Image (tube, rainbow, N blue to C red; front, side, top):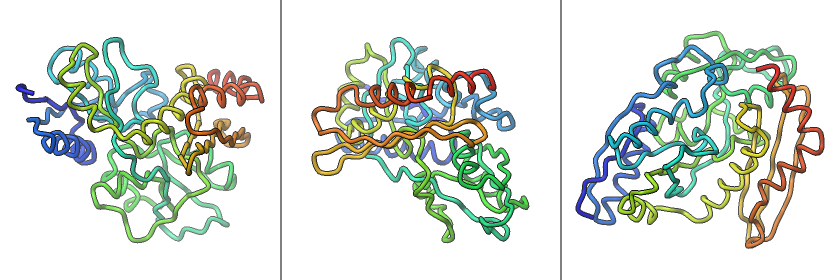
Length: 302
């Protein structure tokens, strides 16, 4: 390829790490690439909870605009931040090999789950699952990049804060003391990075498609399909996780009420090769099992 591939990215430390990972991968294939940092709405407004912003893709919209305006050739995203329906003219070209998808708790002051605790998170999904397990606890909002969230944990009298393990590991700031929340179903596509480009840009599509990890793409596609069918454009406490074990794909999905009191789960297995529409099928089954009514309640409350 003759052109220099301009990689759009948010300018947080984690986002730059992700973009540099793609840059190095492209360069290993003989391409030239450069980073173009772009501020997102989600980075500028750090006070309003994400679900109150009234905009889907608060971390990706600015990059979408830069892509459509020709300022950049590709964008690198945490796939969990990407709306399930991409803007017209933009396509996903690669999902890189997925890192850990698990949530972890970083303990704060005197964490004892059997007592009253204040736990911090900016995620409706994490809040609802935590309150379902620990209804006696209080959950408070937490926004900002991973560095600033860790700092806020130190500065406040909280008993802990919830993070995605992958983000902390990627920039080498995972504390020695943490608790794996293996009971908490992660956000759809958590731990995965994706590359998007203009549908008309054949050069960039060809170059970045070589970075695709088939199994990671398969699993995140199922999870995001589950999310798309359930939410219908509404932010809700939804978790989804798919994994390939031998020749089977195992899927777990969850939908909770905002207060965590009600919880609908699905646990299904399908043979590899028979998985087309699997995420949609699981979502429809959950909707038929009380999910439709619960989603309507969530929409009215938000």
